[in-house]
Image (cartoon, rainbow, N blue to C red; front, side, top):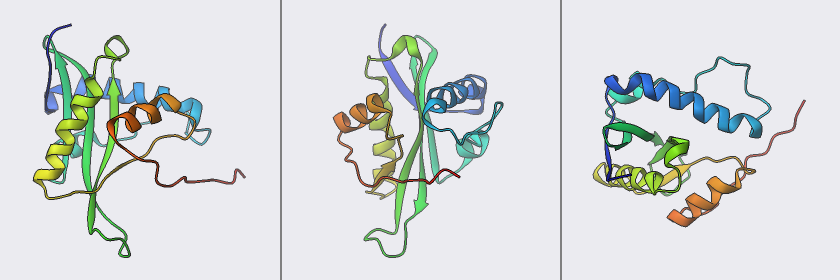
Amino acid sequence: MGEILVRKATLKDLEVLLEYEQGVIEAERPYDPTLAENPILYYDLPELISSSDAEVVVGVAASRVIGCGYALIKKAKHYLDHEEYAYLGFMYTHPDFRGNGVNSKILDVLKSWATEKEVSEIRLTVYDENASAIRAYEKYGFKKHIIEMRLPG
């Protein structure tokens, strides 16, 4: 496969990022009966790419974008021991490249970005039934923290 590089995303990456956004939605749809019918979008990618409070990155192999993710600085609840945290999202690796450490390389870059911004708390959300994603994040060092529950109407 060759070397995997991670770089900051640009608006020139938007076409493939929109495709990958649909990949995220397709992967998550079985876990979330509350998602609206297609077509839907999760992210304002142009805004995230241009924001100073966010970092959108892409994993690249042989000039092909093969994965992505973002970190977004958010304000923490007033009662927590930190004022802000980096929220990670849009974690996606093209199916042909899964199992090659793409997600870990993206996480490394986003973690470094958060550290440069002097943000030490990093969080993400994952569906409780998405066991493979949970294993991957736990392998990286994330710990389960809270479970959000819902009462279907």
